[in-house]
Length: 122
Image (cartoon, rainbow, N blue to C red; front, side, top):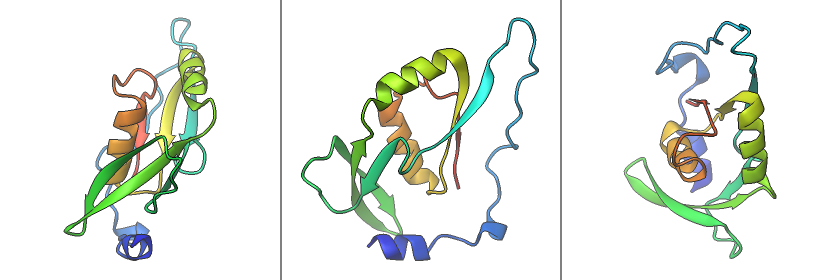
């Protein structure tokens, strides 16, 4: 139940960062890339727990002692977009979603970790 999933998320003020805040590398003549922050859900992909029948892929997420199947549609041309912007920017993907979901999804989108430089999630 996606509503139960959302209801069980901890309040923002109780969330501790699993890593230090983002820090851009100093810009030098060799490092001219700016940082581009992209939202994951509803920007790069659309995810649902109900099978739409036209999903690009699906994967299981184990949350709250239950397994949930997540069905994902990639936005049109998203892989071409990520490939191009990764050459021009340091790409950071942000999501308010849980790490257990985001990690699996980003591992599918970028299995070699060549396109997305940093991942930020709960």
